[in-house]
Length: 428
Image 1: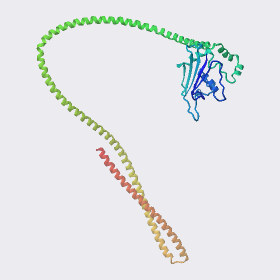
Image 2 (image 1 turned 180 degrees about the horizontal axis):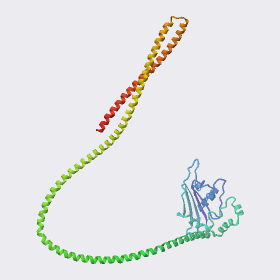
Image 3 (image 1 turned 45 degrees about the vertical axis):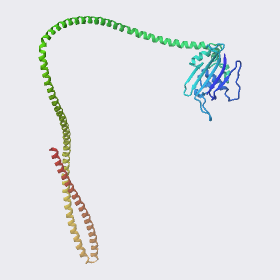
Image 4 (image 1 turned 90 degrees about the vertical axis):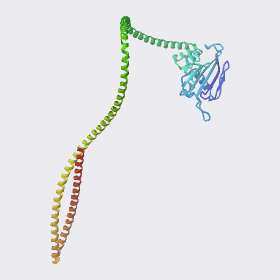
């Protein structure tokens, strides 16, 4: 058995379809740095089932798909096909050539094919593991891997010796058998639990079976009793039937009379039905009228409730307006008294002004002392005039306020009268 052909599409740097033939014997791949020699080894390792991106010198498994360049678009799938010569039947398949194919899509889906038929990774692993072609085998030696193997411990080198001896397959089979035994043990434990549950339900089922059998016996007894009762009832019915036949013969003469009476009754019934339909129509009209009256009554009750609420609000408004009117009366009386006092002050000031004017006329004929007195009288006169103007302004403001209060009082009276009229209307 040897690798006969390698086909690569979209894997790492192989954007186009690439095919390489290997002849029997020793083969080697040479080329300058960066031409893709390591990618060929990664493709073979990946096609044989490698699941670690680090073994393929990638961060993620999707990185092995050709990601594109400036001139070329990226690929949506990576595919590697390995064709082995199996003419000596070293692989457990009855074919001269065995083809192993692995595909990976950019969506993350992956599939394996064996001779063009879809299969599992386990099938490929079982086929090639005893040939030393496992994904973790020693058949591909990477850079510095020799030093790592030499420096590794006995437990790490044990895997290489097992693979060289061809017992890795049996270890894998033993591991799978152990997993199956563990699963079978779990199933047995579950089976014991099920048996326990079934045994626990058997007693209740037995009691139900015994109850069902008692019910069957009771049902058969009931059926027998019903048959006897039906037979007895049938005999009684036959006797009653004979009696009824005799009565029928006696009643056949009165049947014609009854038929005539029925026809007359039918005519009266039709007339009564017509009268009933008319009465029903009148009743429906009365019902509709009653419904209208009920609606009117409900609206009247609602309006009455709203009217009572407005009446209460109007009463409270009237009381508040009456209180305000009494307050306005008191305020007007006070303003009238203040106006009277201001009028008295105005008369006294006018008298003082007239006295000052007479003194001014007298002082105008005097001497320097008279002139001094004249100046004082003049200043006093100016003060009196200023005070008179202030008093006049105060009197005018008080008169305006008094007039405003009288206007408010009249407006309040009108509101009270309107409220009383509204209250009388609402009460009516």
